Structures are given as structure tokens and as C-alpha cells.
Length: 399
Image (tube, rainbow, N blue to C red; front, side, top):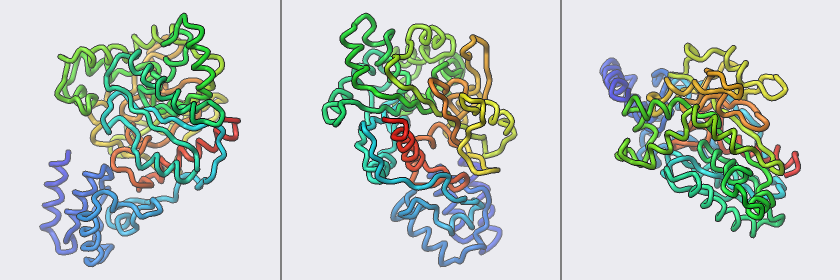
């Protein structure tokens, strides 16, 4: 993908002086996972192009965004981005009763974890006490849940209420559920269960495969490319790694049916969920608006999707190997279900507890990865602002 783009850009560069530095900047944008949609560098001066090139050399991907998180307007004009207004209003000083613990995904590398810059922005803007938990990568569920519990006890001890809110990403959402469930880590242990219910006030899951994903099945039985996309930091481990194989087996739709029957919700904990929706090459050819509106409806049946009209997220190239398998799962009724997805997890699979709706963001964008420094140039989505707004809603709900 990137090699093909480089060829096109170099060819274009030879076609006119108006593209001086244009190709170099476009290549930088690919590395920042915000690829250009067109080349219109004639709309900015050569001086601006030189200035932008110098900025990328000095600051890397941070050069895309200003201090306010907005995309540099010169890039918007040069590379065909609409750069719409932010999707949500800015919030500040949220008097949330309980601290918030952000729990990472299945791998303990940065590809599957919260962007620290995003969490810093959330903490600085809202004044909420924020903790980040990175669990052991590809470890048994019991090990990850116990690690989580050890951290939560520390956070709870520092909390004025003795309780915390959890915001759990991807497989981390399953770990969060497993920790507090009567059928989970402390099954049969009344004291342990009571302790978790006393500490955990709410669980919000983000792009979590509650009902499994066919990506896991494909990684087990089909494509090495899909497996590599899933393994992140452990890309060299492959199917010889017993922990990887076990983890993938547990995430198939069939395995999650059994898990959900056993790992029921804790009655004292509030459960919320969000899903992501993205499009290959930013086009709706394979994901229609009708399907999005249908599957992204909240519990009251009203479509709930965070986006500007006529905007679509461009799926990261890194998710191209997994996207063909991401839409299928087994729904709550036990039937095979296909729905829009974020490149890794389908909307149907992401629904748990009170489903709040969809955000136009892929599986990485929804937590501010990779290289996220502010608003998406095509959709206006900003991970930090999204979670700031959700924390305000948590406060309004009494947390």
C-alpha cells in the first residue's frame, strides 16, 4: 500500500514544479496514519511547504496538529481534507466523584494501549484523577484480572470515595467484566466479590469483542498476515506461542457464547459500551449508512452515532488484514450476525450493558492511536475530547 502510494507520488512530483515538497509531505502523512485524499499543494505557497517540511523534520507527526489539537489549515488545503469543526464541545473541571482507570488491550505494547498523551490531556482538562493500567500481554484471563485488581485497590485507596470508574479498551473490557462477575475471578469467593463491587462503580467498554470476533478465528486457521496484525509487539511469536493460541481461541465467537453464559454482570456495577465504525479507504462501498444507522441505535432504538453529516473515517492501513473478518460474530440470540465494524470488532460484538452508540473511528483511532495529536482531519473526532465528554456524562449519572 505505502510502496504503491510512494510510486504515484514520485510520478506526480515529476509532472510539475507546483508539487515541490508535496510528495515528501504526503509520505510523512502516511506514516502518521492520516493519509492525504488528494494532492492540491498548488493551494499553498512553496514557502508554506518548506515550513511544513521543516516542522515534520523537527516534530514528526505532532506537526499535523497545533497546540489546540486542530489540524494545520495548510495541510487541510493541500491534501484534500475537509477538516470539519470538532464533533463535541470542550469540557473542563468535572467534579467526578470517583477516579477513572483506563485499562489497555490484549497486548502490552503501545499498539494496543491507551495513548498517554490523550490521557494527559483528559486529566489536565477535566481535573479528574486518571490512572492507566497496562496488563500482561496475551496472558491468561485470570492473570490479567488479578493484575487489574491489584492496581484498582491502590487507586481506590487514593480515592475520596473508595471507588473507581473503569474505561476498558478492546479485550481489556472482557478482563474488567471478568474481575467483578460472580462467575469470574472471585467465583465462589463471597468476600472477594464483595470487595470488587465495593471498589468498581462503573465499567465502560470501548470496542470490546464481548461476543467474539472472526478475526481471532482467521488468525488461528487462516492468514499469517492477520495473525501478524493482531500480535503487535509479539509479531515473531506466531502459532508456536501457547499463550497467543489460547487467547485467540477464547476470543472466537463460539468461545464467547460460553463465556457470556458463565461470566454474568455484577448487579452493583453499571455497564456501558461504545463501538467504533470505519470504512476502507474512507468509502462507504462496503459499509452503508443504512447499516450503520440500524446497528448503531441505542437501547431506545434511536440511532446514536457521533459524526458530522457526510463524514466517514478512513480505516488505518494497519487494519486492512483484519477488516475482512471483523464484521461477523454470534449475537445474543445465538444467531450469526454481520454488522459494521472498526476493522477489528463489530458493532454487534461491542454492545454490552447500556449501549451508547458508535463513534466514527477505527479500532486504533477510538483510543487515540497511532500518533494522534488532535482532531481527525476528515471527521473532526478527537479521542481526548470524546472521553472528556463521556466523563461529564458519568458525572451527570451520579458517578
